Image 1 (spheres, helix red, strand yellow):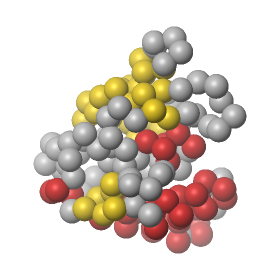
Image 2: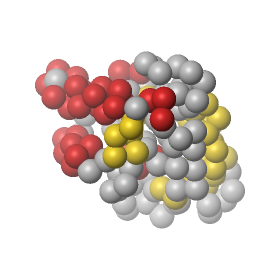
Image 3: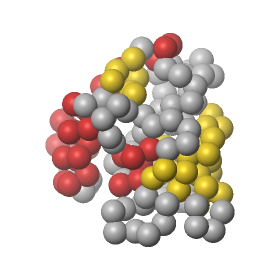
Image 4: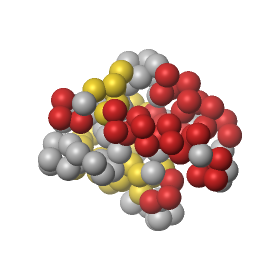
Length: 136
């Protein structure tokens, strides 16, 4: 995440709990956990009722477009324990998941720093808060 990310307080608390819980964080990449810690410290927190509908929150379903080949992909941003290792879910603690959470539509992300592919967050197909689901 970059400075200026916007998170709901609820998402922030859940992410902090995962980081602080040694059992929950034991299966995660330590570098990603460290990056998430730093990013959480620099994010702007808002109440779930006040989050803008163009911001990716936890459990949002988004449409990504590969800027190289134009292919589109639909993903749900999920907590690690909810990641089903199928193509339709992306752990928030993955390299790309950390870039996406708290970002607005139009943000360009990379799967990892060494990758040459770029993706743009093209749309948010479902955001729990916009649908009135405030504790997902």
